[in-house]
Image (tube, rainbow, N blue to C red; front, side):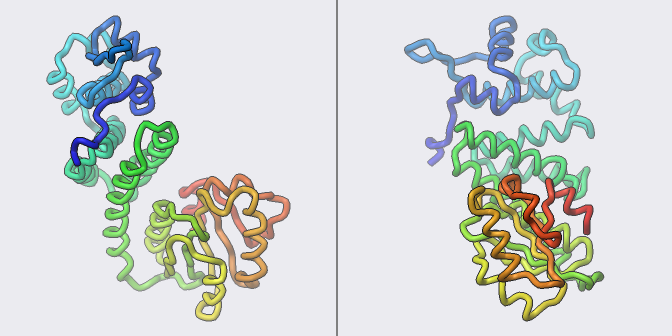
Length: 299
């Protein structure tokens, strides 16, 4: 199984993972010999995991103010030592992002847990999620789209983040709600399965003292109709990442407004597909938020 892990990277992969343009990497490589590429029979450069890790460390040092010429004069071991020495409040975010990416690339859950534990010794769970996990998931989406990582790697790291969300959610889920003016029903539309953002919203809403009903992924409109028989003043919260499609999203909102909602309910929406909503047609009880922090401000 371990042999199936991606261990050879193109220069485009390095660009996607490090954020440094391929042209710059080539200059660094030619001028300072910072990497040791392997060459195919057709003279195409490829790089192993050691090169990737070294580049990520070099980028961290460079962002911290070290000149490339100075970094290049050190051995890989010395570079790793410098990275450990300078990890501080200023740089821990970038270091953690790189460590989580390496954990994902190598399916290394031990590295994931160690990195998370180090972060949690300095930050709250909310800070870790906002400062590290949200940027990480944004990067992972781009890495997947570019073919740098596989769906398996994306699912691997997403599941580990979900584990941490569930543990922290359970700690506050057992507490009695302190605010009773609204009930939040969280769900994903039918055929929508990207629930990490919704899970974090559930945590934030609970943290703010409200009761939540978490229904999870792929919930048909028909299944939401019964909720108003049990609760008043419902705020439905949905995350639209891929469903409904841009051609169907307005019809979906119309169906929600006529079939599910009443005079005392609201629908709060986030996600990429909300960009396709015709804002001129939506009723005032439907609200669109551009990000998780924007929605949390409304709680």
